[in-house]
Length: 118
Image (tube, rainbow, N blue to C red):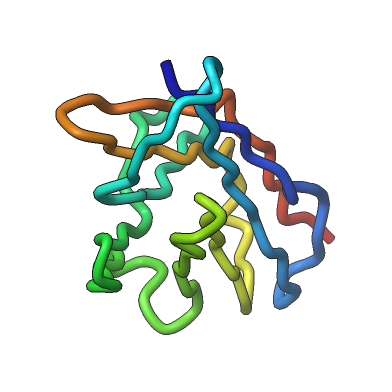
C-alpha cells in the first residue's frame, strides 16, 4: 500500500504563485517505484480534471488551461513530486490531488485546497 500526501495549498491573490508538493511512501516501508505522477483538481460542482502529468523519464503533459503557467516536476530518488503554479487565476481555485501510478495500481492523496481570491 502506498500513501500519497499533498501539501502546499493555500490562499493566494490572482497573479500569485504556489508550489504544491506530493510525497509518496510505502506504508510497510517496502520499496516501490513510481511510473507516472499526475496532478488533478476539482472545483465545487465540477468533475475532477487532469492538470498535468509526468512520466518516469520526465515526459510531461499539461491541460490547455494551465499550459505555460504550471510546471510539473519530480524527484525520483525521493519519491516526491511538485506542481509549480504561477500567474494564478480565480478559476484555478480547487482542491488539488496528486495521483501516482506504481506498477499497475493508482494511488490518490487526500487533496490540498488552493484558493485564488483578492
